[in-house]
Length: 511
Image (cartoon, rainbow, N blue to C red; front, side):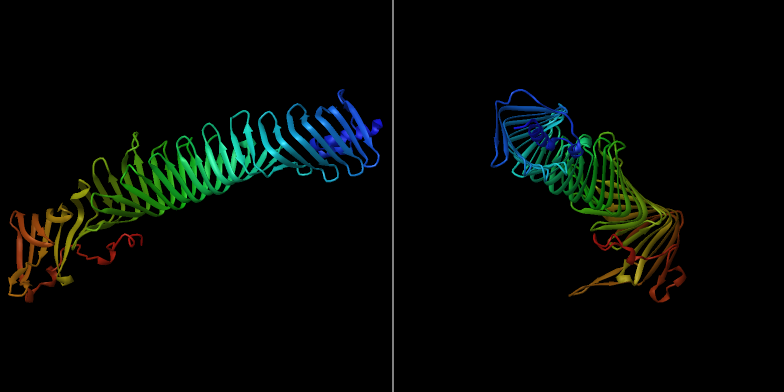
């Protein structure tokens, strides 16, 4: 075997591990001492080195027990303890190696290991395409980070040593000291520690469990975007949505599309199409078809608005829930609407602004401002200010019992109004009922209308019927028989009856 053929043989073996541009260069190759035997087969054209084969080319070294080179087909085969070292940074080990110099394609078998200063790959066999700079394993492999103790396993893996980009599929599992992940398909940008996943995925961190079918995740900061069946579980909190952004370092959670947020330790559930939660400033809001379901002792309150806002205290307890624009709420026995609303949970009261209306049974309460005080999660009293009225439909809308004044207090018992106190310019119009028992039925008749004006009034009610009235100072009181009703005095000031505005049920409160 001539020196030139030896040099050509060694050069072709190294082709796999040096840039393609080097093919045209005639750099000096140094055959290191150690080869015990050289054989040339004239019939096959094979050149064979046997025993401690090693050589050096531009800092790249190769070691093996034996090596074959086929001049015509430009094929190289290496066997036994194959080891390649590139610039003292990349090391490759295997039991045997095949390389085609024409196609620049290589195959490695048996205990394949690839290692640099940052990671190592272990598998039973691997294909390498020098043109693409891409390695592939298809029978299971493991990637381990030497610096961060990250470990990734999969059935199939594609990797690019120069850019350190990886692509995995088939039972992909990722694990680090802080994170574990399972998915069907994953792309990993190692240099920026960012993974992209496709297919059912579960990520478990120290503080949260994340689920989705598509998205990305930054393994150092734990920042990520989850899409398609996205869910985040963190202690007692759950967030579900079409797309969720998660950044625990900044305390941020952002959701878009069919978002649901709930805390198993708290009585409410929020839903809407845009969700924002910032734990650092203890603020949560939801917009676009925003809905809050607030669980009470024996019922559920449904609250909807353009925007719902929740503020927490330093202990994580809800201190205030606010609703803005087109506010409506529904409960089986009480409904209401207003422009904006603030619920102070610690003080147990609700403030309603700009033309609030509250309905309870057959009674409609109105004013420019309302403040409802709660007791054991039930309305105990409502304070109404300016242009106040309490309208009670009777006899299927034929008549209306009415109360009005400057300021009004409506008192509740079991969510039914039992008393109304009016302070200043008090007015009441009501139709007393007369009940007559017969053998078969109870007959109700109304003989006329009472109209009373006074400074202050106390009206006692039962099922929307006026039972008694207490007044301060001398009242201006008139009784009109039904046949002599005075239409000018038949309605109190600011009278209106608005059944069409009354929420009819939980599905109708988001007009």
